Image 1 (tube, one colour):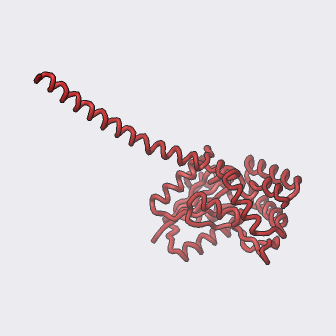
Image 2 (cartoon, helix red, strand yellow):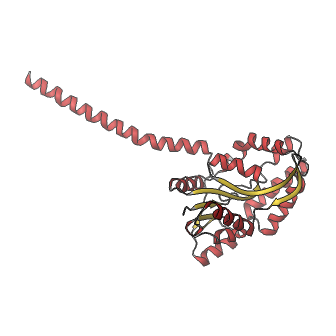
Image 3 (tube, helix red, strand yellow):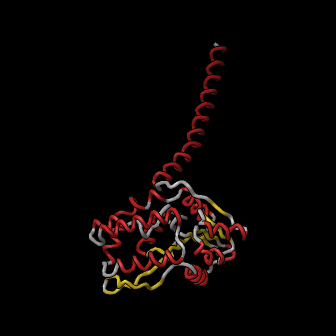
Length: 265
């Protein structure tokens, strides 16, 4: 059977909350007020410093779902597409991107599993080159958000969605991997054979230590474009070294032939 790797998004793959990142462009497009932008900025700061437990995540969910009531879906998707590389790309952890590449090189499918909205998570997944996403889905009617939630991808719901996906696609979860920073994702981590805590909050760190789960620390957000440039440079260096070595060999051969010619003369 095939296996897969499941990555939480916020503070695991990117160094911020994806759901709160788009406050300013939403304000510029008259979807929210300046007060909403300030609240989103404050919530982002608190999230980065202290994380968010299930109650806090539920409050953020309720706030955002009510805020987007009546928004046009196509407008939100356009805003996300236009600002994705400005607001998300620079905050992708280099370590997470490298780990995703390693799983793909090993033949494993890679999925993002996030409580943020599908309209946000899907483009981020495409940017990272993953195979799919599991994300929160809003109820849509006549092209507008109703303010209701169809599926909330958080807590036990993440684990349930992963099991359903594994059943449908034939993934062996006992040989699969999962990564998260939050205590709320313990059900997700428990449903795979290789769970890993990444930048864990205090509660998850304690659980990981008690259960012997690996703990990783990601510290270096770096734009994907810059990361790919670094990879190209690293790839080019061996080629340059090989070319230099070949030139040295050719030079030595030419010099030896030149010396023999002079001696003969």
